Length: 116
Image (cartoon, rainbow, N blue to C red; front, side, top):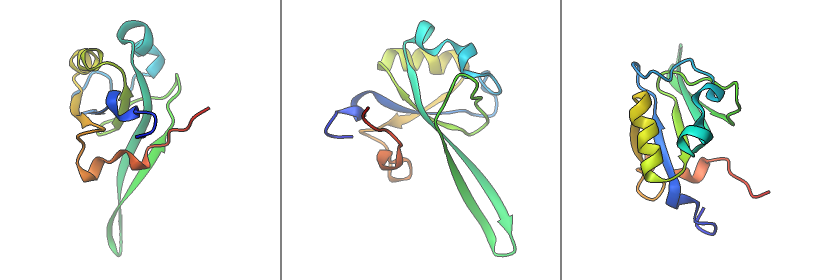
């Protein structure tokens, strides 16, 4: 992340229960044409109950055009601060932070980004 300065324009957005983006395919959101942003990864956290207690399962999703957003999904988004804020405001998403200023629970070390 540091070598390529990826943290400078990576933001964390979370989809709350009342977001208008829920259930919509990413292709319908016109992320690049309307907002000039890209969703790099989606993390979907689910809680599972068992006889031993509760555990959380984090699924890392590499988004495609048919990928849908669900409640509490965490999106790692690349783009300018103004464009990301406009996207968040348009769809009722919550801006959780940036890669440079994220807390330890939302570190970007686990983000699946590679150079091609």
